Length: 150
Image (cartoon, rainbow, N blue to C red; front, side, top):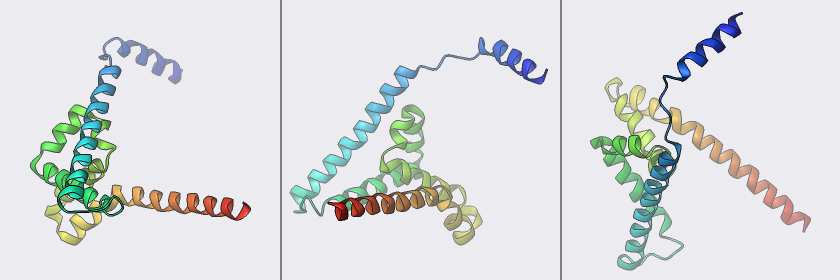
């Protein structure tokens, strides 16, 4: 009986829910995510041409610069507006990760440096970092075992 009521309710409210513009959202995400990557490539080219970085050494300062820019834009409230417009396009690059950490730090700064900023900043980031470390270990182990077999 409860399942039938729930199903009837869902069918009745379905006609009042707005349609999601999936294609438009995908295009926005693609364009904004691509634009962030173009900015990253421009920063990388700048470091290589002006500061004489090599292709091997330019990655770290490029990522650090993108993180700095995203954190500043988050503090100014600009990155949130970009995120509302682009959705996943702003969340997928490393700038989205910087945004999530900076937002958590700003939200909990009134609780103090240790109990507010430090503990809450890594709630989301901690799981991402753990997954990255474990995935890297598993892939490295598989590669090592394949190398031994050959």
